[in-house]
Image (cartoon, rainbow, N blue to C red):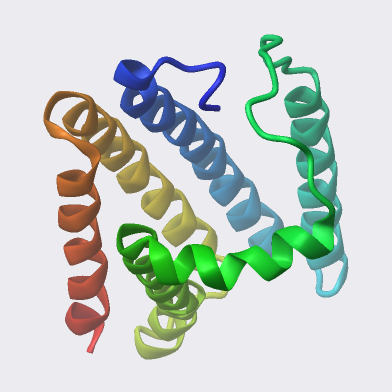
Length: 178
């Protein structure tokens, strides 16, 4: 990405990339709703898993078609084992990178709750399982808007601020669910 997208456009690129992906996810949420509501278990779930496999495979094909512009090699190539042994030193010597890794790990861990919101909502509000598809579609729509906003903000004001504020929203979400 760093070689293909200029630094001053990365926020737009990432925001647009995720927004378009979330729009597709929103459509997938409606498909999931339809298949769960009108299908029989386990066929409907098998079909959803098969569709997921197909879409992921096609997306990988498109990604494989991207080409990075040729640039001179800045660093000599090193073996995988040498790369792995250098990770602790890199993390120890670069405090910004260290804190970014910690941040990423904790934010990724918070994503565990995402699938549980739908389960909780279905059980707590005594809804049909298929409503989880609508929930997915609404989440994708909200994320579409958010990614566009955060991408624009990142390009204008810096990426750290947009990451901090968007993470604060992620912190508040499970508190609201409680």
